[in-house]
Image (cartoon, rainbow, N blue to C red; front, side, top):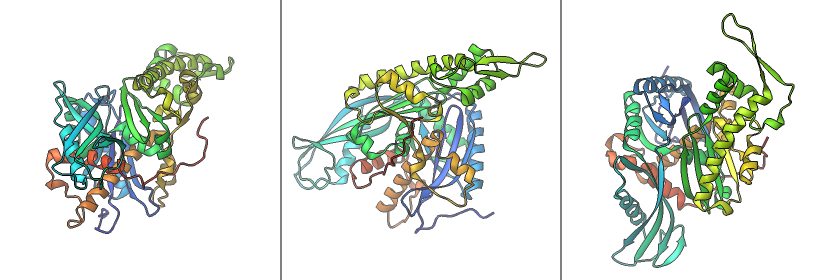
Length: 447
């Protein structure tokens, strides 16, 4: 079968690679005529070499990546060579910093001036073993005039900016890059997973009002806080759905795969919402009788751990200083976001409004994609994968517009340092472009 090739006039096809603790997910897509994301193919494989967002076994991770890529490539009919990789893990840290640029004259401020400020942030001295992953502009001050979001075209000599800087361990970043390289792929950019998820499930009005994104994955829970359209705080909590499964395994004395099924099919985050007389019969080990488990007791186990995770999230919200400014409340997504009654528990613990974030509002119908696959993509489980596509498409379009002579992004001719900054400059372009708003539907996603 002949593979699909992108011509100069077609929308660029991009690939997102989500290296999670429980699954490796590869998504292939492009922007449709309706300005939504047309997913061409999806591939996922069990992730056995990743622990809490960090690569623990290179060979197993590479094998899972190759398997997921093969499935996505066959389904989309696209040769996959370059990917946009999501990164998370408990090693992720964030800090605030202020940059200053004194210009030679007071002519119009150009994009190059802003890019110079961004580049200067990479010269910050970090603790040994850490490197900068993202530099995100927040707001600018031009000649002592603060609160400017779009300084391009303004006249000014002294330009200042607040930046949100995200860093990670060098070894963790290199291990991810090594896995991608060994899978015969090239990582165009690393994207912090909560930033990707926010693109898929948050609207611009929510980011302006103030909102907390909580992405509950298998090994970690990612937190991103937005206010006035600007990212204000990020954090990665080293607890996720897997530890809930482990609690069920220990508390109910069942096998791990049985514990996972119990969580998915009968799990609830509020014990009081279940009846005392509801019993689940679980097959015993070879030659042993069935085990009977109370649904309410199961919910007690889940609720205890979920309360701990939510308390960690609430601590991050309070430490950010934006607790009283979050009109949009909390949006939960990721695989853990599918847990029954979780919205009510989050509202009870934090006192903030909550809803489940679905990436379906960004998806365009693709008749060639199997209906079952398309319906699965609407799940919170694929928020990061869809978000990586959105970020990747924005990056590809930015470089396509800025390099009209070539008509496409020449990955092979880009230096390593410049390649790492693609995602950062793209974030800057999106930050200063208020014309691209995301529509939010009026559906009530709470259960």
